[in-house]
Amino acid sequence: MVNYELYSKKELIHRIEELEDQILRQYTQATPIIALTAFAFDSDKDAALNAGCNDFPTKPIAAEKLRSTLKKYI
Image (cartoon, rainbow, N blue to C red; front, side, top):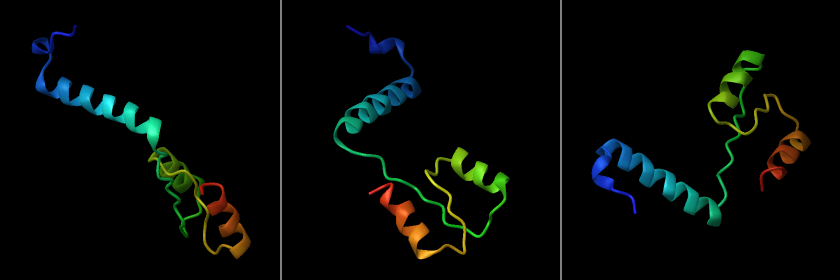
């Protein structure tokens, strides 16, 4: 049995959030984030991917490229 009196409020909130995430991951999928942008530098792509984006197609984009990108996530 865990003695929760030894934890700070911040630690308890963090632990609750972790447990919620573990439970939700069992029943849901993460929402993919696709950054469609005109900023095509590698540094822009790295920043977007490091921020949590799943993909980074750049504009202008052909319809088939957009379609194939979206198909990866649905």
